[in-house]
Figure 1 (cartoon, rainbow, N blue to C red):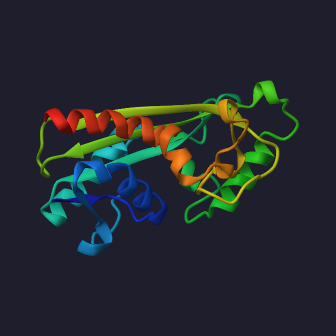
Figure 2: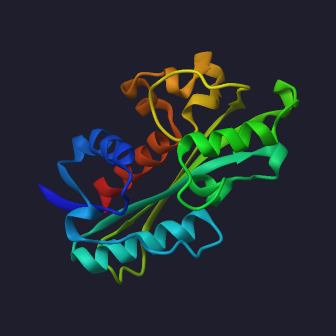
Length: 197
């Protein structure tokens, strides 16, 4: 079983990655096990930030590293919150704070103008100086609801409506979410690439 460090402090993401990567016989270890503090996300795109995080975790742990940068793009907000999704309402913002700001920014907009999508950019580095990282992208289309629904998931899941399931992402069971989400789509690509790498 190969040890791989996951460049995140988000326990929700850690649980999702462990479940999704179980078939590859990888032991996914959080960067906190290596006293790896988070790196400053100075990139202007999801892929730049994912590479920054993966290189940092690989360098400190000495292991292959997996990082994702993901977020919500809302069309009516010109793609915001985008790369700033986790700190949309300020540094150290809670999920509830970010959702509150999002709903306030979209207040009064009809459903057809509330289109949005989750993006996930995954980066896998074999080592800290890997010049050819494996990069995968997944997108999950939906709408922003006017109020929160459901208790599963994290982040913007309670306000993200999934049309094909007729419910909010936070109403999906984890197994169901892990078949459909942006992260699941990117992970499926990654698994295919790792099998042939």
